[in-house]
Image 1: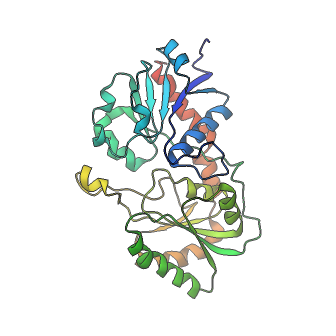
Image 2 (image 1 turned 135 degrees about the vertical axis):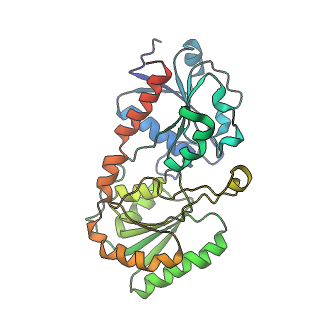
Image 3 (image 1 turned 120 degrees about the vertical axis):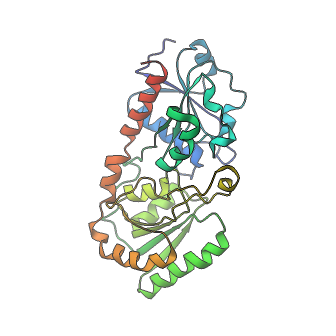
Length: 316
């Protein structure tokens, strides 16, 4: 088979233990597989022929670039000679493999947000570059005109010291919302289908997003695409215990890596919540989150950025 850099993209993905056995997008996917699925979708819609996990074809064309998406298991026993783009989502911290990009085959290391690039770039230098998945506006249509029976949808993705944060963060938020005479529904992160999530978004006037940090945050971005404004808890640092082991100090981070005043508002601490929530409600009709997604998170731009790195790996 004759490969054309402007037509063919060779991608490799090894399933993670949390992946479902098929790529049914009516199920919640692991973040690793979601990136892979959205990358394939973006490239396919842009007109590329994406060829997946074809080791024989790659080996027969050793100068042709390949892309590896997923966790470090994708690198285990990796023996293809091809120039490669790694990522997104390979390592939690560069000190887990500080010499990775010294391998002459590895041309780019993809990260999906600015704060993560600040972590990896001191180790991987100019090879560390930005890319993000696109959000499919057809799959996540505008829900702003649909009947709304939920005032506030709360997306609970609290992961670290969860019991304390439920007591000190989530419960006071619920008390305050009820005191305003508003109804709410708490949606816990986990085994939730995309169909169910889309239904809740269609019924909700607004969403509160509770997550310590995100490297992309597809769930809140899907809400934005659905034209549901978001009030996000954004504590401002990486709370994964890995930072205490691997980093030189607290790592600045964000729960909403791609966000602006068009999307909604943020608050950092529980004592910030009440004034920000009041301001959020007052401005609710002025936000334009779907327009933000269309401008900054399109599938077409995602494909364009990735393919440019792919061309560079081929020496174009």
